[in-house]
Amino acid sequence: GQSLEQPSEVTAVEGAIVQINCTYQTSGFYGLSWYQQHDGGAPTFLSYNALDGLEETGRFSSFLSRSDSYGYLLLQELQMKDSASYFCAVYPNFNKFYFGSGTKLNVKP
Amino acid sequence: DADVTQTPRNRITKTGKRIMLECSQTKGHDRMYWYRQDPGLGLRLIYYSFDVKDINKGEISDGYSVSRQAQAKFSLSLESAIPNQTALYFCATSDPGLADNEQFFGPGTRLTVL
Image (tube, each protein chain N blue to C red):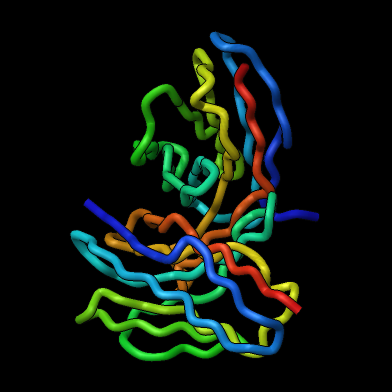
């Protein structure tokens, strides 16, 4: 089966940098994705890592280490609008994703 | 206009009632998915479909059924609703031709079963 672990909640101040970790156990692996979800809203795609290393998209970066079954999402120059839940999701085969339970990020002034 | 739409957005029903949630998309994607989300939990896959003739069970399909009426439409039914099916339901689409495997989500349907 599949399992993903990520912290349930993280708090940081505006302007800071925060890292949200995700460890996974899967029977197969094609890639790791990150999604953002504001309260009551739809999840929206942030990034996808299929290979080891860092992918950067503006203020957000995502890292993957396949040998360690580990990834993280790095958010820089935090803004109040970044307060949301962040989900990692693994792609163990070519059919479907499995999502983690989510990390609620609280950004304080 | 939204690319993935869901109706209704909110629904309150009673135990034992049959209910259908509908999803439509204008993205032209073949792959469609139904997820449920409970507080403190991530998205769990109920059913998925890769084309009109292809329907597959996800992690938690018991108590649910689906119908893929056309490439653009994928409906989820609760044959006899029960209170523990109270949740937020999302439809999503994807295109296997996209390198990043992005899933595009609808706005969600908040279902309450009394």
